[in-house]
Amino acid sequence: MNNNTLASLDLKYIWHPCTQMKDHEFLPMIPIKEGKGVYLYDFDGNGYIDAISSWWVNLFGHSNRYINQKIKEQLEKLEHVILAGFTHEPAVSLAKKLVEITPQNLDKVFFADNGSSAVEIALKMSYHYFKNKNINKDTFLSLTNSYHGETIGALSVGDVELYKKTYEPLLIKNIQTPVPKNNTQKAAKEAAKILEDILEKNSSKICALILEPLIQGAGNMHIYHPYYLKKARELTKKYGIHLIADEIMTGFGRSGTMFACEQADISPDFLTLSKGLTGGYLPLSAVLTSNEVYSAFYCDYSEHKAFLHSHSYTGNPLACSAALATLDIFENENIIEENREKSKYMAECIQKFKEFNIVENIRQCGMIAAFDIKGYDPKERIGLQVYSYGLQHGVLLRPLGNTIYFMPPYIITKEEMDKMFGIAYEAVELIDN
Ligand SMILES: *Cc1c(COP(=O)(O)O)cnc(C)c1O
Image (cartoon, rainbow, N blue to C red):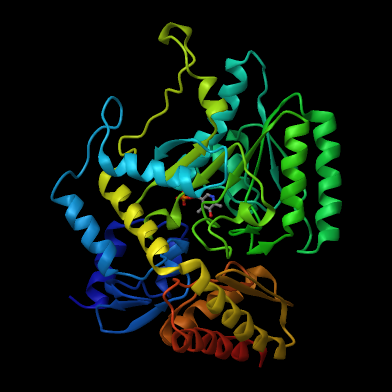
């Protein structure tokens, strides 16, 4: 098997995610044979630094020995079992751990198997909570430029036009309030003021405010000030609506703290987790909520208040054991502390892009660094040039429109970072000329 034979077989049978398949008439599909650490290797023996952690999921490298071993141990015991009426050790241990390490008042864990489903669950639970209390609300509030996934409910509360516009007639009710323009406290104050205006007028029909704390990922790595989160928490309490913190991307150290909410010292009513939860190994997600929310569903069956939501692979034992192994690594290796040094180095490296006139908005937060390329219409697909250049030179970058970003696995070394930023530098240099 080589790259070409596998790539042509692939195109015969597979319809890929988030892809205009016709692009593959000129873009080579890259079949990956194996991964080790930050590197992915194709069938022709080329290596690529995974600078985007395979769509933001990988934390401790590909084929991590410890996580591999823990999954294998679980595999020998139990691969899967229904989670209704039955339970298993990895799910129990993981739920207990998640409650312990997340902000206070998050007491109960509801499992699912992907991020979008976790968002659907949080939205449905919030709506259903009010319904169980005989309060009729049917609308959600979300931030402009937000992303919460691609299923219909999650898409409804998102704001990436490219993904959403086509499906407009199918969406559920949602109001948008502006995200702070930039990461200053002033911008956060302005946005919080508009949030309060909207809540004042509409809180009687709004179930919840959903947001990505501190960093909007798919919304071009847009960073805002923690002050906004503090205000959002204060105002949602004041107006009697829920706060859903979608930490699917920011969770597990990506923002610089274990959870982004910690940087504003807030606790949401719902917390959604996925992506890094299993270290990038297996599909799993979790929604955490309070005993107060839980108890609104707790009554005799005949009262019809139960949350009857389920997925076949809910709380899969292999995925839970990967998550437990991931949390072990955080505990045993002082990762958050060590990442501080690494993110400092990332912040340094990215400053070099200042030299280009076409580069603006250089920014960094935790283990994410990004900048924008200005002066090009998105139709020119400048990001695609960077992507192609990266692949030809051994780095997997996957720009979001004109935003070039770096979100590597935490195990990346300085030398590997030098290569990652260096290749991106050359790619931008080519565009600048
Ligand atoms: C990726 C992402 C999701 C959706 O998760 P999937 O597993 O891709 O469905 C939701 N919210 C945020 C903030 C994300 O980054």
